[in-house]
Image: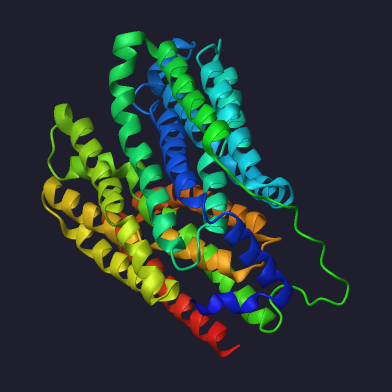
Length: 420
């Protein structure tokens, strides 16, 4: 087991083991339902990408600049809402159980996604997308449940499988979104998404099992989590949260402007959208292939080793992307980058879970989700600024350097925690 488990006090360790033992017969079935629920909710959130500008236009925005601006706001504000509420829902999961949070997210998403199809103007669209972020977060709730239920020796693999469902949803969603509006209309597509998530809600209510008892309050003379080695543990947690931000930052630094980069490689305007879609899908597909495998590797050799190795590998794969001359070369390299990124989030989640006691696990995993969404916001801002002032190829150099620096910091954090 990783050294991050050292921070448990004897009573909190007993408490954690008790929770895992009580739910040992449930976690595999819960994992299946959580993968399906995460997949459906992510399909619902990402399927609107191909037709979001059309829906904005349908809601009364006529200028091209206005359509672009409102589409960006409507898409990004969901992640802002999730980043704000993830720690709150995580803390409530610690207090009332993980299953209620899954039900809340599934039912909330089913209702809000259906309601988006009833929007009358772009302001209602943005407000409802924000609400989806505030009340949703099924994948975040699923991470808390599986991260706390799966035995520590299998948690990396389980979280990798869960990550595969999330990645698959992000990959399949835009493909479905490209087909549904032509068959049932744009508003009908939202109703279909709500219905699909409602199925996940029913399965969650009926099939997910949890033996939960509210954690006992810490005794007055009981040491605070992280003693001994409290400072070291805090430094390690800070490094892990920062690394989670870097995962999404690395992936998103170029993706919002990747179409422009592909155009510079000589791809014609008539093929630009389809080629850009293929290149972006390669990253998600690569991660799907490797997430469970690298999660299992973290179970065997330790999460810190996988994190440092994946950060270095991703930094190195970033560099040749700046020198490609054909779009297919970029697609291959983005696929390889997806593979190297795939081991990071399962390993980070495993270490964060083992670094805190059971009374704080949901809240801490909520902060981890917020860190990821921060990277999703910061990445495009950094990539866009660098691309404008220094050229597209510079984005890859800067992102590569940030990943290598992060790897060095994580190696330092690992050794500091081991010495505590």
